[in-house]
Every structure is written in structure tokens, then in C-alpha cells.
Length: 445
RNA sequence: CGGGGCGUGGCUCAGUCUGGUAGAGCACUCGGUUUGGGACCGAGGGGUCGCAAGUUCGAAUCUUGCCGCCCCGACCA
Image (cartoon, rainbow, N blue to C red; front, side, top):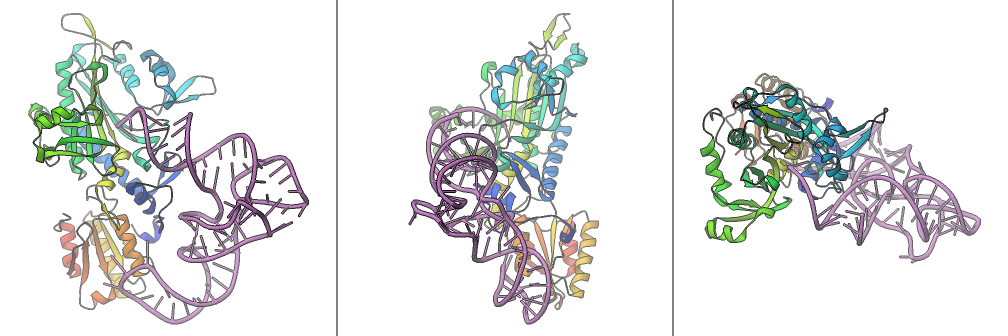
């Protein structure tokens, strides 16, 4: 993409509304525009990152054996009357009446609808297990939206739903999602720690929140420090094999959010030098809830013994739009965003230092064509702006690598590569720079 | 929803207390000088002062109502 025809309305000054760093940087980098409290338009740069995050989530869901589908944003109220949640959900649910005076709602989640779909087609123990997911916009009319896209009213979410014969088999689905989440967040450059979450009336140990540590996190969290650096199982993990060891390895160490925290246990189980208390951002939540919906909604399976019993379900959410804020919170400096390569809107920023210099233009075009061909998705700054403005803007939008091409360097046959994260600069020939960027032989640390 | 605050060119804000008919910086347009880390000089365009009613000779400024937005709290992917 050429910047001269692209649309990145960067802001020099920080909008007064934004308090936390990710919100500020997203506004300043021209990624989003607020249209109402907690409702945002995604401008081209923000939209590209959103799609990259979404795609990683999708790939890891598919790898874990989940099947993608898409449910509507609007749902009939009757579905929610069946589960009893129409009245329970309260004002957070946005209710809409259509021209026929039928009650609708903008879905805050999809348990009811997926249960309705499942029960329509699945009757036998032979029909399970099933693991379905979709990535869809949701709306929760929060009393008080804040923190930009991290706590908006409208948000993009991946939610998966599992259907199994009993709790034991449901645990296998749970473990698939547990491992898939570790890999998903790891691919985005995040260190996500699974923490035991409240299971409500169901009880048991099958609910975890996936938390990334950041100063601006919404809640306080407590965990064994080793969990943070444990890493993910890896993309070659066998999802049809036994995943329990991966889960056990991470659930055997103490990790709890504020509401689940037990100070005495924390002190007893974690050596003093490993006790970590920090702020955390919840980016995923997995939950086994048994027959909570299948029972009232009559999603029943005939078991081998001929008897009907409600199907056992779990749900598994990832806050896709929230993740963007989370990634920025975890990866930025005073000059702007530092995108991990996997979610960066463009791979390399090419800065044309002098758009009126023929030799410079030619070199930029060569680099642009070569990097495009190599799949590096270059963004070429071909504007007539001054050097300082270009550097500042490129730092702000945080592409992992910058290629600086100008007359001064070209005189010596050199151009400059800057690694955004480390600030390291390399003076290279144009060909070397193109080759090394194409191969990915620079490390962004 | 309780508490606090804000709404004035695209952005950041001053002006409101003490009413006199709207300003600055940035951005934008034109001309010139510049050009490797957010240039400089000159000229110019752009504002129903959130909306409505009221008080007044006169309202951005005072009064009332409404709307929107932000922050703290309770609640949430």
C-alpha cells in the first residue's frame, strides 16, 4: 500500500477522552474512531489488525477441531425466554422491537441460539462430540464503557460451544480449547496465564480465565511467576491425543484473579520469590456449564441405554477486539505502538525520504515491488512530508521494520533498516536489505 | 445508577466567576524559503460557542430543562 492513497488519519495531539495507553495510541495512529460511547468505527489500519487477530484465532480453532459457522447478531426474544435469561439479563441486553412488534435483542452471547440449533439436529449419543464456533459482533449495553476497545459495548468475539455426552467427555473438549488458547495468544506475542475462575452454581474446576499481565489491567491477579514464562504447547500438539498433561502442568501452580484469590493458599503454595501479584486483562474465558441450557431448552440425547439425558455443554470465548488493546498495552513505547509481526497491519514500512528525488523514488519502488512479492506487505510512505514527520508517524503506527531510503544514503549505496522494537539500525545495500527482510533474518526481539 | 467533570473551527485548549457580539497553537489553502527525527516567514479560509426555552437593550458567559461525552465506584469477553 502507498501511504499517499491510504487513509491513516494520525493525530499529533492526544485526544482528551482517552486515558489508557492503548486507547490513546489507537486514536493517535488513526486505527479507530469513536461513534458513540463504547462503539467504534474501525479505520483501515485498525481493521487490518483486527482481521489479523481474527485470523489467528480462526486458525487455532480450526486446528483444535472446531467447526466455524456464523450466527446472526439479532436474536428472537423467545429463545431467551426459554432459558429464563430474557428477564435475568437485565439492562445490559439491548432489546429491539421490529415492525411486527416482535421482541428481538442484539445478542450479548449465543448459548441459547446454539443450543436451539444443536437440539434441532442432534438426538443420539452418536451425534456427539461437536465443537462449533463463530466470530461475530456482540453488544452488551455496559453501564459504563471505557478503555477504548477493551471495554466497548459493541465488540468482536469468538465464541465456541461444545456438546458432549457427559462431563468426562466434555472435559476433553475443554482441554482442546485450553490448549488452543495457549497457542492462540502465544502466536500474538502475548504471555497469557490461565487462572481459575468462578464456576458459579456448577462447581468443579472447569473454568479458566486467560489473563495477560499489563499495568492497566482491570483486575488484580495473583500467580506463580513460572506460569508467565511457561510458553505454549506449540502448534504441533496432537489435539486427538491426551491433552491433560498440558493442562495439568499449568493448573498445578497457583493462579487466581481477585475474586478467586485465597491469600493463605497463595502464601502456602508459592515460594516468596515466585509470588507475583499484578494487574491483568482477561482476553479469554473457557467454561464448562453442564446442562444449564440443555435442560430447560430440552437439548436431549438418547444414550446407549436408551434413556434421554440433557447434553453437556461448555462455552469458550475470546475477546477479539479487546485483544487489540491488550496487545498494545503489552507492546508499546513512548513513540507509539510496537506490533508483533504476526498481527502487524503491514510488515515493513518504507520511508521515502525525498519524494522529489528520482533516484530515491526508483530505489523505493524496487524495494516496494520486491517486498510485496515476498509477501511482506510493505507500506510505502511516498508522501511529500518532512523526514521528521515521517519517522514519527512510522514509529507511531508501529510496523516491525522500517526501511529508510534517501539521497544521503544512496550516495554511498546504502539504505537503513530499523527494527522498531529494539531501535537497532543497520546500514545495508538495497539488495541486502530486501533479501534479509524477505527472509525474515532480522529479529524483532 | 450514585459521585465528580466536560461540551467553544478538524484536534488541543483559553474566554464563562465579573454579560458588550469569539481567540490561540496545531491542522488546512495559497506564495516563498527550506528539506535525514513532528521547519520557518507572509497571506487566507473555516465556528448555529451541544440543543431548547427563559432573563436582559444585549447571552459562549446568568437561569431552567434536555442531549452527548469523560473520570471514580458497583458490573462485565
